Length: 92
Image (spheres, rainbow, N blue to C red):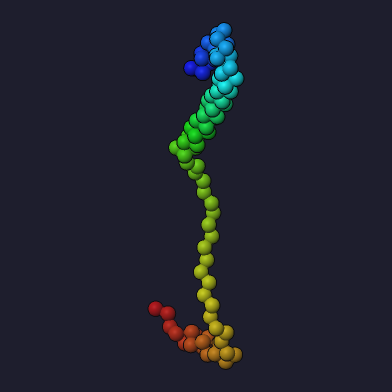
């Protein structure tokens, strides 16, 4: 990592200007380490998501279906007439 190499160089330097910039490079290195860690975590998360999408889940569910037909309530005499009509019909 370049930030670590530069920080090591600055820490071993006796130049006062290098010593003044040393805290900045320490912060740069810490930031680079955090970014690398978060990128590695995100890469793992995305690869896991891709694996999940590549292997879709299969399953089944039971489904019931019904058809309901609502007929009006027949008048009291109409039911007897319908039954009489059916009795008189001949079956082939």
